[in-house]
Image (cartoon, rainbow, N blue to C red; front, side):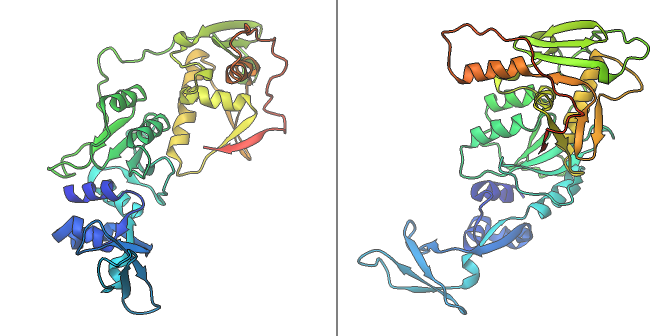
Length: 366
């Protein structure tokens, strides 16, 4: 199985010809070809007798292909190539998801789909019923390996990432994964998958345990989430409810600012809702449900209102019962994007806030 993961990492999402897979997997090809899927036929192949030379293919409607040199003069006479050797084979994501789920003990996705991020969600690990952790299989493409790894990890907080090989998994990428609470495992081990555990450690690393947040308010009788207004400022968040107000800086909230370009999932959700958007989820989208669950926990730790939910399920997606005012944060972002560093920025008083009952919202899908 070690050779399978090495070859999948070599050929990536696009795959290669059957002849290339056979050459790479050698005697193991028959054992692992069931995890490959035929896509189409290629237009050219490498000359088997002259490595480095490319042969163009002539494709008759039936029979073998004719491979010929386009060099002038030709470096060799034309030759016949079996049609099956020119079929492009790519990894079969569904078959790989079933294999990995059976070996590693997670629930395979019903219909795993290829993602543009190279992090393909193949299932979820049900550590507890309310907080399943999405499992992603990394299969590279032609882009920079480290760049897509960093981008994918930022989009998969609290997830589990399976790497075919360790190439590109540098200390910098590992540090980012630890920061995002992403659990990474390498599949290409000499002991195989039987002894590989993907479950995150039950004990958190000393010094990294996040304490429960201290509540900002002591809720009074009759308080509801619809009474809350959250104002997103350049230096933190302000919470106001029933005549009481509290402010916490980004450091106190243990968050990156919304204008940093890399806010955490909870702040990203609040920022989107501030723009009047709604959250829609597919049943199989474990990552989206995880983000909403974390946002709900964050709000209830700060404002422990019982018997009421800060999020509401509308006919077109999830919205909020409270109001989010992102006017100041949006103006700060616009100011920085304009590159106007000579003038001191003074945010105006908020002029509008998003009301979840309004109809001029946009719907987006996570």
